[in-house]
Amino acid sequence: MRAVILASTSRYRRELIERLGLTVTCMASPFDEEAAKEGLQALPIAERARALAIGKAEALGEQHPDAVIIGADQMGEVDGEALGKPHTADKARAQLRRLAGREHRLHTAVALHHRASGRTATVVDTHALVMRALTDAAIADYVARDAPLDCAGSYRVESLGIALFERVRGDDFTAVIGLPLTQVVGLLEGFGVRVLG
Image (cartoon, rainbow, N blue to C red; front, side, top):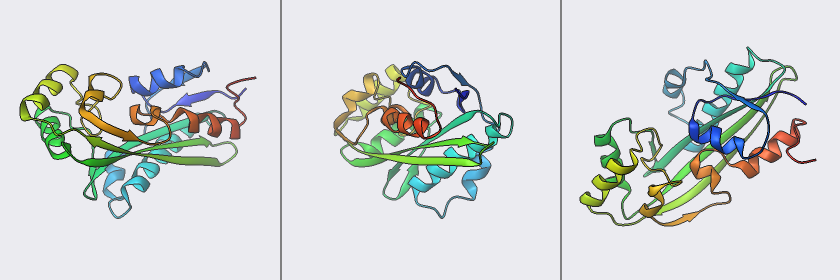
């Protein structure tokens, strides 16, 4: 079976891919995500996420041409604007105030790349999330307790962040955490990597 590499150091994505029981190596991609974002501003937000996932996978594929590389990216969207990782508690609180009582979308893109064959396959999973109306005190309490500073949208639905929401609509809840496993399994099979049997 081909080697599989997850082009990510995200603990969330690592924990998700480990559910599949495959031997997967996790490593950072040399892709310059911040520089690439500048050139993607004209694209719809879901397509920006797809382009970033492809960039991460293809950049790592240069070093590992025989491996199947999984790249992923996640971007939130509200009012046609992208929601990224807040990196600070102040920005997280501001982002949550903006989302409180409203619906927003979360786009999770995955790209599988095998450089030796020149193949790349992608998928974007989009969820619609409706956040509860939240007080400033509730937002501050949440950010202090869950510290979602490295999460697009400033929440962790796999932990306390689920309490922020009235509704989450989409096909695969694992996408909200960072990697839509049902889609990943199908993509892997297309590259000859079987999870079962």
